[in-house]
Amino acid sequence: IHNSLEDSIYEVGIRCALGYFPCGNITKCLPQQLHCNGEDDCGNLADEDNCGDNNGWSLQFDKHYTKDKYNKLKSLYAFQTNTPECLTGTVPAECTCQGLEIFCDAVKLRAVPSVSSNITIMSLQRNLLRKLSADIFNKYQDLKNLYLQNNKIRAVSKRAFRGLYNLTKLYLSNNRITSLKPNVFEDLHKLEWLIIENNRINRISPLTFYGLKSLILL
Ligand SMILES: *[C@@H]1O[C@H](CO)[C@@H](O)[C@H](O)[C@H]1NC(C)=O
Ligand SMILES: *[C@@H]1O[C@H](CO)[C@@H](O)[C@H](O)[C@H]1NC(C)=O
Ligand SMILES: *[C@@H]1O[C@H](CO)[C@@H](O)[C@H](O)[C@H]1NC(C)=O
Image (cartoon, rainbow, N blue to C red; front, side, top):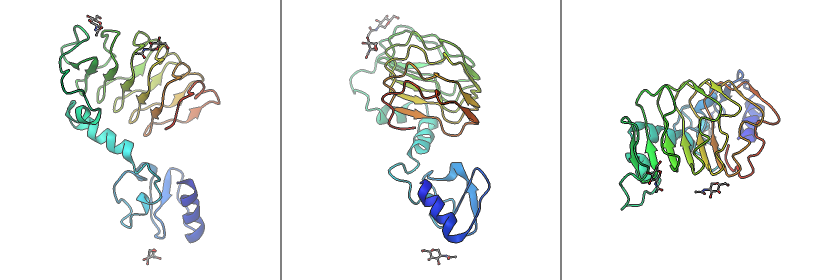
């Protein structure tokens, strides 16, 4: 992606402001988040060119996930067809539960709910979370996927993700995060996907991504 952008700048001499990219050989600059989002925003498909095997999929995923509560999740995560009943004990009234997976999407949550510690998926998308405080997920040591996108998260404690040793996918996209403190992901040795686009990050440190030994997608 970087090379193709550099090339097109070089070829046609179009300079775009910081945070914008050029639309191939036409004199148009678009905001960075439209790049590789699966839609032809330039009009000449230049913004969907050279997207590698990414093709804006994570944006697409986000869109799908946020459309309804969990029907889409159900098919995408290949739920085992015969285990619909809840195996985690009681869950908050606004949440739904299947097996060891809990979905509390778009229910105006302002705080992370406390649920049974044996859950493997927790989805809190499209709520009103503003901060992630220290050790808030610490008891969920079996958690594999954590969905926090489309909230209003601004502050992330450097201990927010402590204890999530088994987490493989973390979604933080479409929030208002401005900085990622050193060692914030330190315990996430098994994390493979860190999806954090569309935030307001202006500060990271050399130690921000320390500990992410299994990361394949950022
Ligand atoms: C841009 O490139 C396309 C395809 O290579 C070409 O058809 C088109 O005429 C070019 N437009 C301009 C303004 O150079
Ligand atoms: C998960 O923990 C709850 C208590 O928090 C318990 O009732 C339930 O049986 C546990 N489920 C499994 C599958 O171990
Ligand atoms: C989660 O991680 C801990 C510590 O690494 C491990 O003991 C435990 O078996 C893991 N649980 C699952 C469900 O993988």
